[in-house]
Image (cartoon, rainbow, N blue to C red):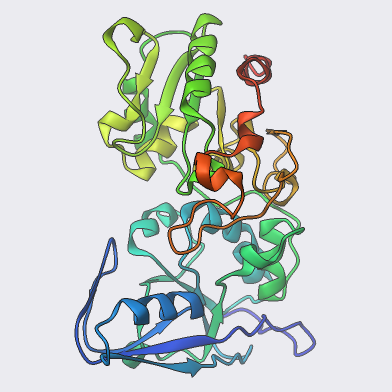
Amino acid sequence: MGAMPSHDQPKPLRRKMHTLTLTQPLTVGGSIGTLQPGEWLLSDQNSFELALMAERGSATLSQYDPWYDQECGTTLLVRSGAIGDLLFLTAAVRAYREAHEGIEVHLCCRKEHQSMFENTDLFDKLETYPLRKEDTRYANIVSLENIMELAHDTHATDAFATALGVTVDDYKPVYTVTDEEKSLAKNWITSNRPRVGIQLAASVKNRNYPLDLWAKVIFGLDDRGWEVFLFGHPGQIPEFAPNMKRTYIHNMSTEKLTFRESAALLSQCNAFVGVDSSLLHLCHALDVPAVGLFGAFSWQTRTAKAPLTHAITGDGECKNCRWHAKNGLHFPPMPCRQTQFCSVLASITPDRIVSKVDALKP
């Protein structure tokens, strides 16, 4: 076992959580499924949301205050956010491990995101969010919920690092594509053209570039000699009409790729363009030159530390509104809530995007 950290090192930020006590099963859906009766440890926001979903009188909340003793041998980090958030976290965790040699680091995150840590040694164990309180025997629990969301002018990795009590020198996210994955990904390549990946949509609508403008980008890149791979979940990308289909444009959403399969194919691309979401931030880990489209959030808080990523920000009074989706509301109380698209992103012309991507051609 390595040397334990000295007492003068800063401690991680203490953030309170809540215990949700259920007397009846609660069906949540998604990866969580059904929570059985018992006590569950959750972030503040998630605990309140689930308590409201529960049948009246079947749920109670109590504050849970995790403590931290830096001489204990294991630290549990809790973050229920999406893949992009976890990618930013990885560089901070790497710095934390270097500063706390000999301490085991476990992560509690959503089950569907755990595959992204395969073939890395970043975490000694993965726990599934949420945790049963009775199964929790951790002395050190560091909640990383709402860290990025409240750090409006700070790079996301720096925000996580501050919460962990460390500083970061290497901002490159931790992710590994295996040789087997790369080999299988090459089966999707059909030409000797340079390859560009495109992620059209994020998990929240206020980060999405309009589909009609995306079409001009996609066809424009095809016209300039790129082989185009469109990434997305099934149903996220409309099927092209027969008269609009082209040989070198591939709608990968119909293939139902896993995240790891998408990452492997992305690793074989010469460039990428997309919205502020997971694959854009994965490009930093894979050394893939990228162009990111920004409207609601400042690019400096997301891609300033990624030297191969170029940001394009639209114009408008509400630029950098910092709106995080809340209770199903994907847009702030602005005109975009009625139009259901971000006018700042819509102000970015397709020609501007095509030119920026085409400049990355090998």
